Image (cartoon, rainbow, N blue to C red; front, side, top):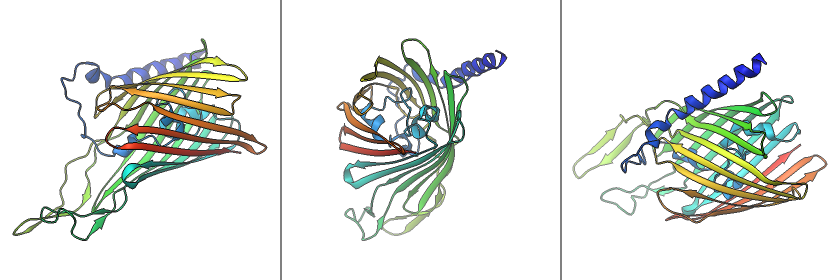
Length: 336
């Protein structure tokens, strides 16, 4: 009983601590969206196809390998297999590619350890100058990378939490920036009408200063810059709620809602729905509200196969982003 009291006290404290940054955003911003005030923007790109199909309404739904990105506490919902792996690919317009891979090891019934790698490659780009707007014959390749380690723990039948520590790096031409960030999250089974509640804080860390040098060309001279301003981190606070409206051996219908509070933009809200038939076929849709640019709803589907060695899960997600076009995601998960 004493342990449960302490656990619930810690839970309340975590909610209050995570909700503190909301004060500035819940009040009117008077048009100040703070867009483009942080670096490492690739950390806000969902790498997995399932969450993409749900309109990224996934914090409280997370129960598979996508939890490595969204909420490590969701790893505790994985089946009893000892090992789980995942690979995923996102294809953006302009030949921008994102890759994601992860592995999770079940240490015991209540503890899981995971590792993941997220990599965004923008492809070769020409170096342009004021006098050569079409390119000077040189090229550069912007790349972004995040290597993470996660720990998920079951505390009670209803409550679990997760922590992720990640090393992130951005390379742009001859300048690079690196940092160490922290993710915190928990899931709580309310115990009423198949409902779940989740809180997540992603990309928490300190500002860092880029290193390297860059040369500017002018009419009469060249200038080399080696000093840069500090770059902030794209911290995001999320609240999620999920409800299994229908839950039988044949049909499963899950509805989810989520609040997203980034430090570098306005709050957004999202809704998602997933229907499953015999735990075999799944269809999904979702929509994000209050974004800077309106977009079409997201769609997706999934397939799960129970094999003698474990489970195979294949997911596909599709989004149409304004001014960018269609975005396709595909992911494969295997447990054994």
